[in-house]
Length: 446
Image (cartoon, rainbow, N blue to C red):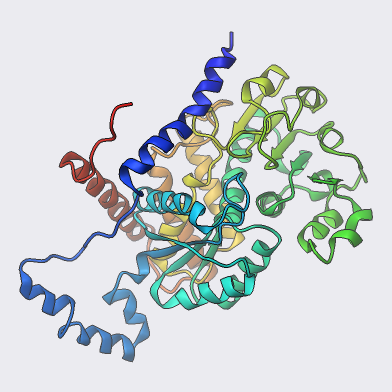
């Protein structure tokens, strides 16, 4: 028997702990040294006058910046605070805890040095220009929590105009891990991606990118349905969408060959899969709608902080597999198992960009490891405590970049694995050492 009150209390616990522990640590990241300071004479090496020598070397050969500095392991986590989690436009200061959390995950899971940068502008042109001005100092850019529709333009422009890889985790990261979860969910129910009908609930940045990546990976868009706040996308809505929401207009053109109209209920009818990134729930998706789906329905209810339907309610309604974005429920579909490993590989080979092919490679890497360790209906994917998921993504994504001809550094699989292992284990071991010696104090008891 499901104890719903107990589950609801469990769902509240992470937020309660966060309010208690964020003030205790006053942030989650800081800057530490990686060069030795044997005595004060070392300052003449790391700073003036010695530092002039590597400066001149870089001036003569700009690529030497990757040898003399940490640029190749620096990522800027950039947000304007206009769409933070499920909280909306709460501003750049209120977005900072999320960006710090992202930096923590980058470091601990991928060995990547990431800096939270919250920008005080809502103007997409200013944001684009700001990111472009950061390029000399960073090896990559992670865009985060930027409202649509400008998030599409910002990402597209920066990918074209920057000389370092730019990634929007709410689009590409969410799409990659959702595809990974879908691959294994379909393996569980013995269905093929090309054959299934999918209802995409929500047409924001995440689900637009998710649907496009799933189509790129082999799903048939004609068999799929996308629902925004006004209902199912269809060809008669193209004119209303094409100017302000061209991405949705494109989906209206490619999907829904049946010409369905209506809302979520109509979209879900007869579908094999629901992938929902809509408004925070519960009760956005009704139990009676799940009962109208095809045999062995798959429900991804991934709104934050509350899924569109509670997992136990979806199961009671007949869902064979239920996934959410939360770590306190089974089957978490969360970007955190992909972006640290992807960036590790991208940085190690100095890739120019992050392509859809690289995202699909990462998704299959995650899914295949899930099978290897014992995937099932309630544990589709590896969890964040599996270090191998990040190492393998780094290797496979790096090799895919080399294969595509967009990597500046050519490395073997063995070299990539050794490099990824060294960076990731160093980050974890340093953190453990600081905790063991109380430089990072244990959190206080409740």
